[in-house]
Amino acid sequence: MRRIAVLTSGGDAPGMNAAIMAVAMAARHRGMELVGIKRGYDGALRKSARLEDDIINLDLDTILDIADQAGTFLRTARCPEFKDLPNQVRAANNLREMGIEGVVVIGGDGSYMGARALCRQGIPCIGIPGTIDNDLAYTEMTLGYDTASNSCMEDVRAIRATSRSHDRPHIVEVMGRHCGDLALRTAAASGAEICIVPEVPWSIQEVSDRLARQVDNGNPRATIVIAEGAWDSMAPYDWQKVLMENGVRCHADSVISTDYLAKVLKVKTKAEIRPTVCGYTQRGRTPTAYDRWFAFEAGTLAVKMLAHGLGNQVIGIKDGRVYYLPIDEALATKREFNLPLYEMINGISDH
Ligand code: ADP
Image (cartoon, rainbow, N blue to C red; front, top):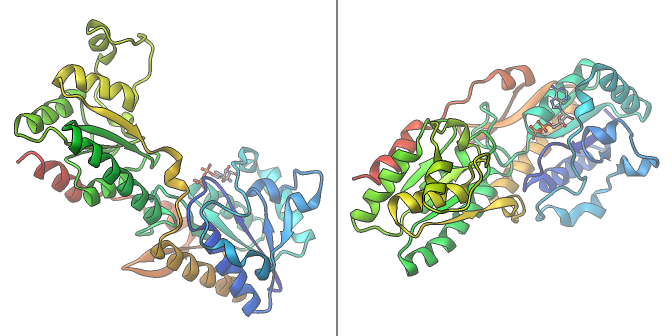
């Protein structure tokens, strides 16, 4: 291949820029031209009035200093219309017209489905798993997950300082969409007493009892780490009624949130529990050495694979080493939640 492209799609993740840079370095090394497609599949559909708003030449010299920055230099977007076949055909034709013979797609499982669609239209694609959620089963780690979990761990550390000073518990919400890995790793790394994830059913009553036990046993500063998707696995509970009966402002049609959960736990345990939602800071930290290492190896390997005419594959980590497998196999791999670690965190805290 003489001319290839790189795009980032879905949620941004720290390390995406490092991967773009690795792709640029490898392309130059192999004498290939590299173009950057802006805003994921939006750019491939060339929705902007000016071509340079969708496609840019990626010259290594101009992007050398981006590897240490979070986010994505190429921008990212969600492009729902790319799920439609006519738009996939249109994008593949656009790429062919520009002489692009292969694409490196950096994104999550949705982006991989887009990559598979492009492959079906004759454009070989290689996927790099860029997401802080760690929700791709075929790889031990996704790009950005290590940085995000370090960010959450640092947030919990800071919160525990005030928690200790006031002897009050805290509940900390982390991202991860429907995957509890970020919460689990954060809880394990920061010594949290309770971890709540979407993969394991839980109830407010049980968490309240456990928190009360912590306080009764002389630990009034326990930390609960909750995954943002954990509401999916919560047992039905009339928490609005509990709040209203105790004079806490709340509408009957309110949706449960970490703020409300903290209020309910406060009513039930009388502990002065405080909530914190880590929010988007998790996405914006400087990529860790691990993420930059993975970005470098994955970006370099992706270009090598395209140079050898390989497509329809994604890159991941297995037994600590970078490997690749077909997109279909990767997407079909079932996730295995680390239940023993979950039980260790939650079990130990009760003894
Ligand atoms: P992520 O890649 O982080 O999982 P999304 O699920 O939002 O993020 O997917 C990112 C983009 O991938 C979507 O906006 C769309 O352009 C493309 N995409 C998602 N699902 C499909 C699909 N089934 N077929 C083709 N493209 C898809």
